Length: 351
Image 1 (cartoon, one colour):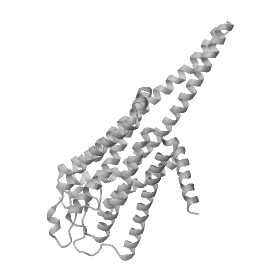
Image 2 (cartoon, helix red, strand yellow; image 1 turned 135 degrees about the vertical axis):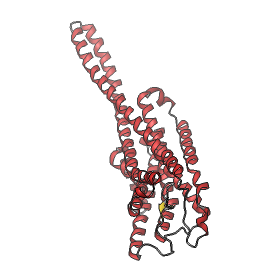
Image 3 (cartoon, helix red, strand yellow; image 1 turned 90 degrees about the vertical axis):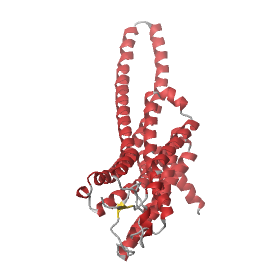
Image 4 (cartoon, one colour; image 1 turned 90 degrees about the horizontal axis):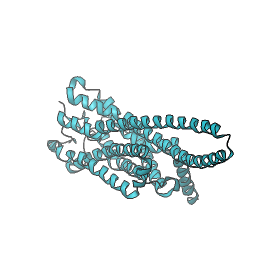
């Protein structure tokens, strides 16, 4: 199997076509790519910082489960600040300039942040499932302290998965004039890292969301059946005045209780939908890269895709870090309002 040279993909290397110190790109292309990626980094940082501020300062966003979004946004900010700039430099220069020690740290951080993103999404999907299936009991247990503990566990799991790059890099590369930053490219490593970092969490998320959909569908049917029950009962008891009054009072209490539940359920539904979109976008962004990476690991050169396409796939994966704030803005009214308030305050302070 050919050696892979990491260009900052989560865990995963990129084919190194450059054996000299000269950049494989023209000056105009370098300037264009640098400007484009710089904008992507800025957009990612600003968008995710807004998410963090919105959750921590907005009353509507104070629910404990939103702490997951703060942690997820933090991972995306770290991708943009600690990984993307070095990936860009490695790509434009054609070799790894920053030394062997930082190579290992850089690869480990890259894997850590990508893995933490998907493990966060996995934890969020389980949180959604428990809030739907055990609404009252789970909401009482879902305290900020409990959510913070889950977040710590998420980061610990991600750290365990990301530690191999520190001991798996190809140390011989550092001896060459133009070193690369390479990982273990054995089939066992490629498959195990891909399964742990992407495919297993994805499978869990998909199964959990299918179950959430089934539970929601069953509840909708149950509510529609209940609506027809009281109407028939009122007609039967309609002849007795006392019975009619008691039924009316009970009906009013039930309506009040049901309306409050409906508001709460509607909010939960909207939030669940937004998170489903976030997860779907994550899978769409990263699946092409992981699939092509595993394909090359299993059958080698015959299955190798063109290098430009492979690079496109992993940069699409990086773009995912900038998309969550946009998704929240488009699909969630609470986030829209919070972002508007933050931006308006900042605008007023600057004048």
